[in-house]
Length: 202
Ligand SMILES: [Zn+2]
Image 1 (cartoon, rainbow, N blue to C red):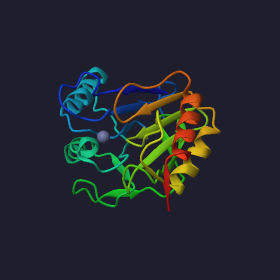
Image 2: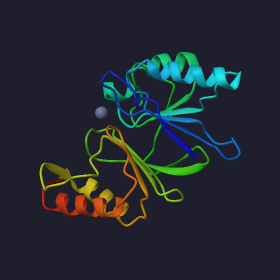
Image 3: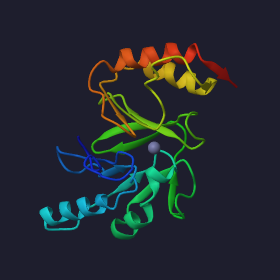
């Protein structure tokens, strides 16, 4: 599985836009995790097509949540590449042709299966994606890296944290900032401790 952040060099405010492809047998699902708000993403996908000498097959887009910095250019992406769109919200940026994610639904990214779970944090429609096989966690804007006890969290989010911190997480890909390649489990356990010591609401 290859994961590339297409907005790494972006000059405008946008989320990370991860292109996930299958670098083994190329039969997996070419996936964008979020589309962000920088048209640069479209140019990068066009460049991939140029290098391939054919139109790049974008199988699907998964929107972690419908905030503008994550979903803004969805209409343009759909118009040009016609991917299936997965999100927890039934309509994102006016796009109705949506596969609505169910809680704990399996979905293939590249050649690996991930579980999409409703986060119960950050926003009503926030999801996170986890692959046990790859040890990879896509968090969207859900804060899995809480450094001190602060804020309010739902019981369901606390439960999610307990579940995920028992996994052998090798890499965290957040919606903003750099990926975390080391010490993911200690980070998750510290977050769990800090959330436990914060305000827990129903
Ligand atoms: Zn964001």
